[in-house]
Structures are given as C-alpha cells and as structure tokens.
Length: 556
Image (cartoon, rainbow, N blue to C red):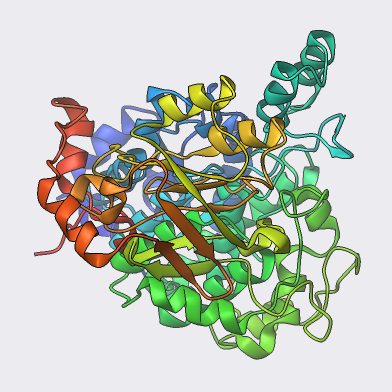
C-alpha cells in the first residue's frame, strides 16, 4: 500500500494538518482515506482543456466510489494555436518544466498519496508525465479528448490548421474573403485537443502506450459520454493503485518507453514526441538517446495514417480501433509484459482489440510503409542529429536539393513567404530558434502552412533548429543540433549555399567544404540573448539542446 498522507493526518500529532483540511469542509471520514491529488489544467484559453472541470467531476466520483478523498489543485496550460507565429510561442515549450515543477511541489508539500493528471495539449501532457516519473507516486493521466473535425476543406474534414493554409490561398487569390470567414467559423466545431494527430493527440496516445492512461481512452472524442465514463473509472483505478502499491516508475521504464516509441512510429506521430520522451525518460532515470528512435522506427512499419498524413482525423482513428488496435498489430515488436495503470500487461490489454477500419489501420503484413513515421538524420549541418517525419512527406520530395534562403527568426521568414520572396527550389533556413537561441524552440508551423497555401509545399524545403507542429507536411527538417545560438553549423549558412536533404539515406548536407565551414565558424559571434530577464532568460541559460530533449537538468 502507498499511503503517505497517513504520516501527517494521524491524531493527535496531525491535528494541525487535520484542522487545516477541516477548515475547508473535509470530515474525519474524508481524512481517514487516501488523499489523492487531481492536477487540473482547466482554463478557458485552451480548447483542449475547456471540458476538464466536467471530467474532474467524474474523476472525483470514481475516487469517492473506490474509497479515496480527492484533493484538487490547478496548474497552468498554454495553447500552441493561440501562441503560433509570434512571440507567444517562445513560452510554450518552457511551460513543460513549469508544469512538472508545479505538480512536484504540490505532491511533495502535501504528501499526497497519488495523483490524477488532467490535460490534453502539447506541453501539458508531457509536463505531467515528467512529474509522475519524477515523484514516483501512483499516477494516471486522463485526457480531455480530441476535437471533432469541422467543415470540409481541401477534400477533408477541416481542422484549425486549415485557416493558416487557407491564408496563403487567400493571399494568392485562390479563395475569397467570404470563403475564408466561413472556414474561421466552422473548422473548430467544439472543444477538445485539435482533431489532427499533432503533438497534443500524439502525446495522449503515447501516454496510453506508456501505460499511464486506461487502455482505449486516449482518443475518445471530447464530447462523447465515453470520455466521462473513462474519467470515472480512472478515479476508481487510482485508489486501487494506491492500495496495491503501483507507482509511476513501475509503469514508466525502459520497456514501456520503447513500446511508446514503437507506437509513435506506427502511427506517424509528432516529431515533438522525441523531445518529450527524452525528457520523461530523464525524469524516470531511464537511459535514452535520439538514436533509439531511429533504431526502433526503422523496425516499425507505419500501420495507421492520420491527418496530416491522411484525410482522417483522430476521432476517426478512435472508431477505427485506436491505440489498442495498433498495439495489437505490432505486438510482436513490443515488450508484452509491460505494466499498465489497470494492473494488466500490454498483451492482456490488447487481447480483444480489433481493427474496425482496414482502410485506416493496416496490418504488419501490408502496412502503409515498411518503416515508421520518424527519421533521425545527421550530416555536416547537423553533427549531433536532426529530426524529420517521413510519414508526412511525399516520397517524391524525400530527397531534395536547393539553394539556402536564410532567416534569423520565424517572423522574418513568414513575412518573406507572405511577400512571395521565397521561390521554388529554395531551402528555407530558419535559425536562432532552438531551445537556447529562440529561446523556447518555437514551432515553424506557420512557415510550412504558408508555403503550402502558396503552392510551394512540394517545391521548397524548411530546415531549422526550431520545431514543427505535428500537423506540418511538406519537406522539413528540425531539431538541428547543435543549434545556431550554440555555434552549430546552421549559424554560418549563407544565401545560395546548396543544401541536400536525403531522408532515405538519413543525411543533411551543406555543400560547402569543411575548410570553409571552419573559417566561417571562426568568424561567427554569438548573438545577444533575445530575453534578458524573466523566466525565458533563465530558460535560455539552463535548457539543454534538442538532441537531449531540451531538458533542464535537475540531478546533482
């Protein structure tokens, strides 16, 4: 049994603590049961978190039903979509560590016996999983669920990102302002994490694959009653975990992390999953490096195609069989004995899973592709690795050579694209956007969407030390390490330099001699920090490089 709160709630020694709880209405009966935190990241800024208060109510019901006492507290959550394309995106990745720290502080300060983590979106879910691994208490993540697809756009159920693609179409006269306003009103039909397989839904799926969410729960749409029943069952299960002594690190370990990498490869999940799994592994004291993603992705076929790799959204994936169906299909590759929050193994959890839509979820024998959705590249432009997503890149542009067109920030690049200064055959280089240089490793989501809207998605490429959204497609390479602000070779690329992206060969090459690269680097000077006070200034000093997960080291 994992029951830490008893130490501070025993009468008479714990009378002061008991009195403080009683001042809020807790009873002797409440204080005789396990005290279970609910880390609720609800707010009215993030659509994926808008329903979390209702979900929290059902979690509380489950906790009460099983014999526990819920103790709810809040934590921050920021919206990638609202933060895209401006200074706000600097803050997004750094919130991951604040969330992990927040939850650590609340669990530690109050000796809570376990925690239910309520989140849905991009950096919130990873931050919560990091906290669970760090604190090693019984923990379950309950996602808010994906948004339904909206009105039709470009032959598919639209999503929020359609607006950025359509902006390029509006600027080039392909659609009217009236058509654009219609998209604004119909692409987000209700709350939930954005309907495509971006980082938000990727990380919810990976939490399930990791074993820290109930089987089948990650992809239940936000507005379905099943979502509430899963929340209630999670409340009951966290009490069982406490009584049985099942803690987070019994679930988050080498086996489960490798299973999660396989799942991400099999569904073509977001490249950001690499950053987050590296950070979760660090908190769980599991050895993991970027090369493991390449190794396992090479061995994992692409089983499911989901927007942006296909027209179908995450709710469609759910009804096609979801995570359990994919994990059952790739079970020969997995550690079958890895434990889940329900006390069962992976093999037991997926035994009854079925592929309900064979047009969306394929088999190992006849997959969409023989290798998984992510790839790790190296070369003289990325000595310590970089990352791309073949699942979202058309085969005909997986080998691309073009002349560099260099920009020292996302904003300048985006304006050049809107002004039609980026042309066919160019490699758009966006630098000083890494963890330190950004700071915060912003997503180049908008740049890619604008190129797509202008008809350049298959005729240009983007190379950056920043990140990409899980919804991006085209030809792109990110997470270049070392980043430009640390004196990586990306810093000395000049306009007109030829660059080759060769995804099948896993190469990123700058066609400049080693001697010339060394000479340019010798003359390079580190730029002034963009932020000189506040948390971002601190983050830019402390954050590790992308190939280390952009972690902040907290072990001595």
